[in-house]
Length: 312
Image (cartoon, rainbow, N blue to C red; front, side):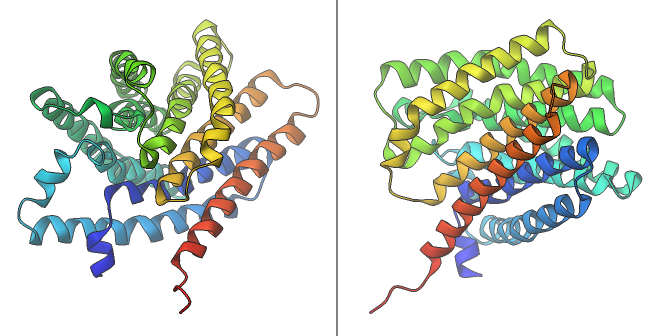
């Protein structure tokens, strides 16, 4: 319990990434007939990590005076405070595969929490003085990721109007933040080593936007879907260019920032395969889902190695 209470908010990237992989396999089940049990197992694993981390955070905020205010004001960790509610939305979608009514209520609760906290946190950033050298792509999480993931969930639960509102929140937040994030990365020097993995979040934003657009606008690609895919392709090439930088980093829990981004890219790829139906689409989709699963397995295995007691 002491370790859970002391856990940093960025550790929520672990269940966030695993829930992202569950989305990949949910699409594989719905489109290509993969076993739904894979999605359920991944959702349970994500929930089994999310709940203890959430309990530890709630206990810390309740017992350590000023801890929540300090984390909201922290330029590194504050964006990750939005992840517990975002993960709650994602897990509610998985639960909705088995029982729509309770899952929909759970989704709405976490949707409201996501949007409300995103607005509050944005207000804190407006009032505060953010250290520009510690400003990083994780700032997309509260409003951009929260808005787009909420929009897709609203579409899945039959609330398209609310989904478009959430999509607008994500899109406008993205437009505002993109120039700030790009300016910081282009002109203020490289991020500190522990924040370098957050650059993978640049890939996630157009991918979750594209997935939400497909869910709300329909599975037939239109000009907006193509534009979002084009930007996602650009960010994919940027990530490939950054691979040598990532390879030189010392492994930290921050590496889990890679997981959701690449799972979001895999999920968008599967949606495009479904929409365009090229020859051997199911084979390509299986390769994409398999690659995402191998990445998660590799990061998880490396994390378990870090938890081993040091030999004396």
